[in-house]
Image (cartoon, rainbow, N blue to C red):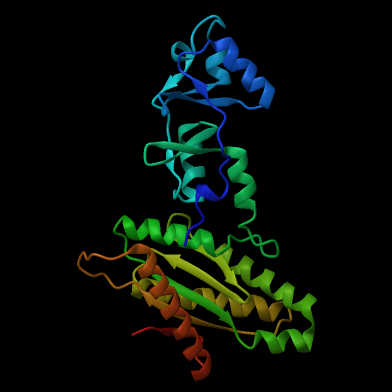
Length: 279
């Protein structure tokens, strides 16, 4: 499940009334050290008063005269990464968070950056599984066909025992870097899924994805050998077959595809294949 703004929003929210004086609202902003106040009328959100609005207006005016009406908002279950993209696209600093028509929180760009940092793997610098779920679900909702590739290092536990965890960490970093160098923006999306597993979701269809994956595996093998890291990876591939439009729950379908890719990588490892495609 994707991480949502509900996990990071500030609540209860410090607000302003549409009919109070601007000077009073400014005092409240200074008191709490905040750069914006959601504006309520009869308990409903009608605007957002920001420091920019304040600078443009005389303090004797009412909040309703100075506020920005119809602010950009998000629902509490809005994905974290999508909220940050929205802030960046709209060039704004904060988003009121709604539950239906009710204001339940507010989230700022700095809040999101801090939280998103927690979803970056500190060892490899790659995104973690929450990111890949957000991207995958979003692409599926857009009607895109996805291919999922799961890279699972071979006998990594034994590798750690034999060569030590420092070398094991080096191996994970090398794998992460090779995969990061191999992907193309807006086509392929990569994360360290957990442990010694890496997941790539791509909009490449199956035949292209298979050819591309073989090239990636070849590069990975070459780099690992050159670094003196005697380990390989087994890759399971699922999805990527163009089908007619169908109804599905995006999160459930993505879970099924990742699970199938995982099972296929396990079978590839048992059969001694570097790449196996799910039937």
